[in-house]
Amino acid sequence: MQIQLEPQLSSAEFVDILNRSTLAERRPVECAKTIEGMLRNADVIATARTDDGLLIGVSRAITDFHYCTYLSDLAVDQAYQRQGIGRRLIEFTHQQAGLATTLILLSAPKAVSYYPHIGMQQHPSCWTIARTPPKSEF
Image (cartoon, rainbow, N blue to C red):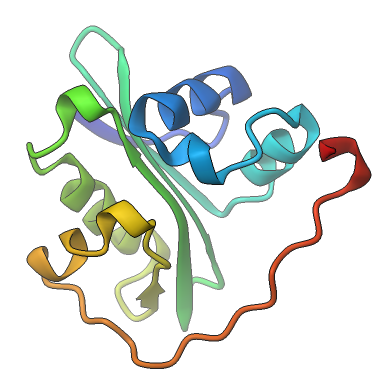
């Protein structure tokens, strides 16, 4: 398995791995314009691929490379979970963004118990304003 930067990851492969990981349940995979914008405006896109090139994991982050890194998407194919791929993607993404940054992640409901297992600390106060999807997503 190889973990690498892949800034030109295609929308089709991204949506495919979101579907194979269940993260698609919480992402606008039906809106090609939004998916393309998510990819092209990310600062760090890391992928995990098998030796024969199959995409089995992805992380997508936004960072200033100095203070904070928001890891917006972490997706690992369900068939490859529990092999350390998610942990390696998180570590690689953080290294690429800079270890001096604080890595921030909002957990998918099904993954809440995973993050403490790999050494991440839960923050007691996180505040959000929900996105208003563009009309093209309706």
